[in-house]
Length: 234
Image (cartoon, rainbow, N blue to C red):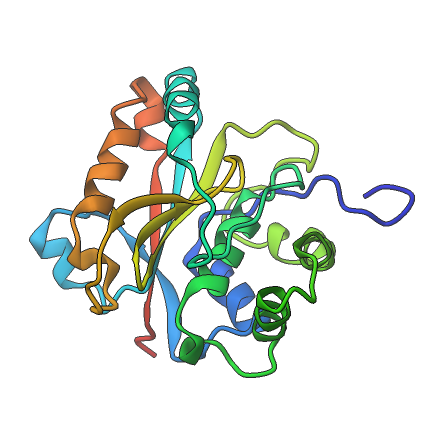
């Protein structure tokens, strides 16, 4: 944190459904929803255990040279859209926070508690009365001292370069989007008018994750994790 109180880097979040769920509930996610591990996108037996519908997916994957080349070549597909809320990542190692906020800002209104932090921010943002930088800074200050220290593995220092990255996938009325603060805007993966809220009902997410998996090799192939936002089982 700088002398002015501005958060420039945070301790990375762990890909842990309990940590993300706790943080999301504090920000305004309905208590009827929670994050859960997704171990496969194409194994029927594993998918059968997932509560449905899955409203959004957060993916953790390794950043490799092959990925960076793919991302740079694909940048022409990025776009501006009034159908989805996207924010540029300005805080180092906060990709988990941005992925979580992108999910909460883009799921259906009825899945967010009224007058919560996220509900108020989304309303102000859509009316041009809020600055996304302010939201991220306020939440990052809390993240720095609380949620980044939770989880099952030892957290690295905030200023350390971390070679893992979070993105999220959300379903909006006009299509399925990938939201990544390291890019220059949202990516429309597929246009759709399907009103089914289950993002796993479309195979474009499976194809996208497999594409990212094809860009890694060796031990990096083990550094993938997925969480889905789904009905709570409690």
